[in-house]
Image (cartoon, rainbow, N blue to C red):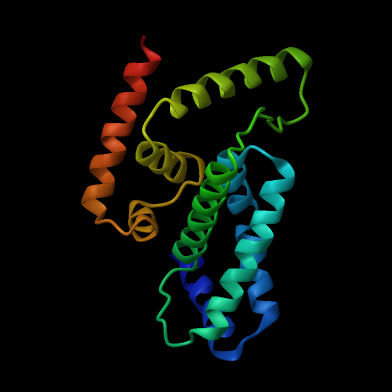
Length: 181
């Protein structure tokens, strides 16, 4: 609750005062989360870094050009912009018929055996998640990886909270079914 109030104060300074230092605070709070969200979808470090840069620039431009837009949640806005940017990337790849060839993971520095086990577990979970339909993948990623609330996910996806809960329930149920096969 305290973080949300602090975030709203920072957002106010950005929107009303067009304060770049305040925006830098928001950037610091969200850059890793947005990078992780984008990287999961595009699977390329360089492409993810470029996209994250563009996402934060688009967000800044939106905030300073739309002061009366009534942004209630920065996280909802930044994830929505990120989601749209990823959709644009997929559209461009479909037009150009580009497909990612490899998946990479940054694993904390531990023993070689633990790294291998962690890597294999992550790969297995990601393979299962990729078998789900896109809507399920997105909700699982936002809820369990990005640790967003149901309300935030609902705002990002432009759905009701009840709808998000139902999608999340169905997605986790389907994921469990796939894991048990």
